[in-house]
Length: 103
Image (cartoon, rainbow, N blue to C red; front, side):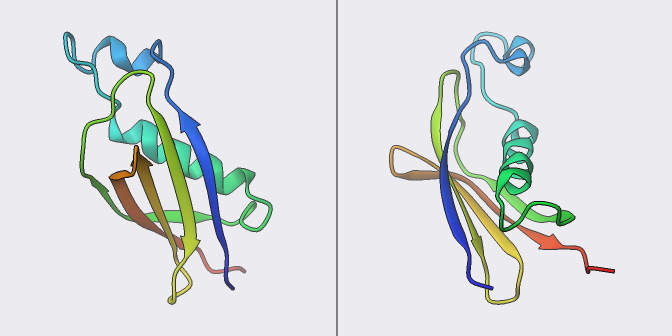
């Protein structure tokens, strides 16, 4: 199954996660980015309805308020799903998901 999609993700400057993460130098918590990945999977017609598990995640650079990120999803050779967030051409987070077997 070959599949790849890209979408723009915006993290508003008033996102509630910034309240305590971190005062004076706010950054987007990794869990917010992972939530955006799972939402993108659920909204993608080719992937929607499939149960996924997070296999790996790496957060490579801080993401601040008002960020505009490109999120790329791609099926890998093993049938898993890779994701990558980039900002201004630099990768800020990446990882992989696995699909639960279909009953």
